[in-house]
Image (cartoon, rainbow, N blue to C red):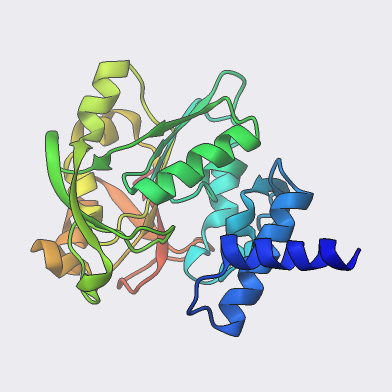
Length: 280
């Protein structure tokens, strides 16, 4: 038994702990290793108030508080899930690891589909694993940026690990990112090619939100979907945009801006807001 324990400790150290591991990193690595052994089909975690889902072990221990998902910056999460109930087509743009897409997939109409757009490789691989672990056959993962024009290669900065801060332009800590390119689609072209119109859209694209809207004029005018929009005031100028330009675009598209509680929004902070078709 003693030798078995020693061999186990050596295996954990060799496989999961880098030579410069801090005590916290070491503890997390051991926890992930243990969870992977106990839950080979994913760790059951509760995402906000939307039920239990299977998460890959390496992401089950870390900085994300899954049980509290829907508070703080993601305060529109509960309303998003409610809006997706019985929807036929929804778009999750900036899907990360699926924390919006997975719960929404459970409430769609029979035959409904969620298109989850995620260009960052580490995020997308985790998203695809979560789709498989949770048998979400109604989620289609789209490995592309969404923007104002269709292009084969658009500059993109991403980290090697799963993070939510990958973007077309980075504001700080540029040395932590890898510069690459990704294909980009417009929602108008994407919808036209498939003959679909979205009922609900979520947009969380780290400062490219105005670009997404500009590439979706025909779709928004035709479908009038409700839009859950994460606003990034400090990132918008990196692409030559501004909060004022974003507000003007939303107004020109015929949408009113409200917070998740339904109150009118008169100025943008780093928040999630809901765009409601005017006079709807």
